[in-house]
Length: 609
Image 1 (tube, rainbow, N blue to C red):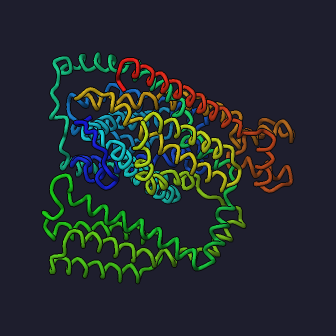
Image 2: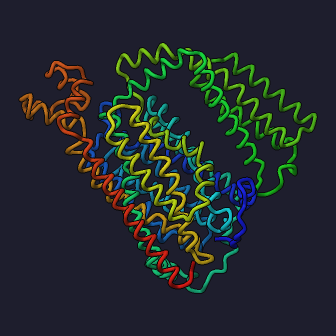
Image 3: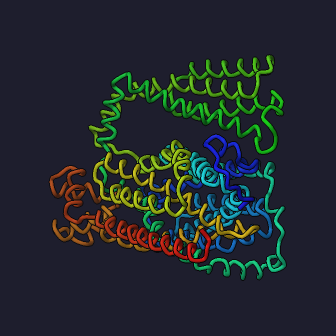
């Protein structure tokens, strides 16, 4: 990490003390996560999607195998690529990884065979494996002890801005054509080429030792650092948490799609929107967040890493602010009504930009103006949209329509965007390991609640609880390992962060994929029921299209499809998978408690307190 400072700083001072390079590297990560989570939000559904609906129709076991190798490349390679990022430079490494990611997304759009799609996932995984250590190495090299907790928290929050917007866009694009999702991801990540021009690489200031000047020396030093007992045991113990956490993103979307009845969520929203006060209040909240995003982007675009905001020309920030507002508003216009309002608001923005230039409005006032224009403009459209959608939402609920799984899970990044800085500030008052332990307990409770739910609101409550636990634990792993890194080896130690994810993600993918294939997948259980209970022939069942299995079962049982779903759930108990997953999470929690006690004893004995 950067030079340490023991002086405790307040909330505002911690933010203002962040290094100049901190902001650009956060933008790079935000765009990378924007593209990555646009894919990850829907890829678990896409891989098992029926061929008649445009999917490759892999089994859950095949999906688990893909995730196994994906996890292996994405999470084990960084253990070594982190050292090479330190050696050859973070900027070059990020450029290389961005190119690999683009290739991977385009391959996914066109390859639907098991081998082809697996190879596309591995190319994407390799790109991510080189990206993360370089980026996190920059953060570790620029943060200080008295702002590290806040820095990692802000980083985690901005990461999830992309993680929040991505699934929304992917959820809309996949309804048009699945290929649009992959093309959009490639386009978004390519934006990082632009930001790299502004990136001041901190690794150029490192003094490279002789053994690190050669590739083999990097490899040997990587293994030496990794097998430090304090590092290796931490990674091993924490892996159980990541087995549980990654199944929230890999198998929970399928669980929601198969078993969770979220029509009640739609009905409640429709009923709520029938009251004009609730749409107004919700529109105010969302418009405020939209205004913060717009004005925040203007602030970041003014290059606070490079110069003071006041040193920019008026034309620079007027142009950047207006263009961003116009483009973002145009995207919303595609999905929302209000052509006249859009035209009027655009004219207002043009007038505002001209007046800002003519009267030399300060940067601070322009940021406030950007917030005001964007928030007011979107408020009226959202309010009208919420009110007019009420009758259709009620009807959709009556028809048994469900909320897209990716939109429910998107509550996770939404909460992180809105509350991460708050939780990071709270976590700054406790040791990293203490925060990790508390977070692991909370996250385990949330994962169990979400995974065993059959009603939409209970599942949403579980995702909410899990997200709080994640915010208390996940950012702290980076802070903890960064605190162990020798100077000049930040990228290497940030690579170790991924090993703990690797074990959990790989083991969880194989276990959950195979278990769900035989004991959890709704279509497979319906086929089993048709053969063993209804008495339908195996050949006749095998000949059914995937989308016809549940309607056939419902017809044979003289039930609705939803009633047949409830019958299967009560008969075969697919929720038992989450008993095992949560038990692993608790085992990891107890292991971390023992590790924490052992570390405290060791440090006290050797005077390292």
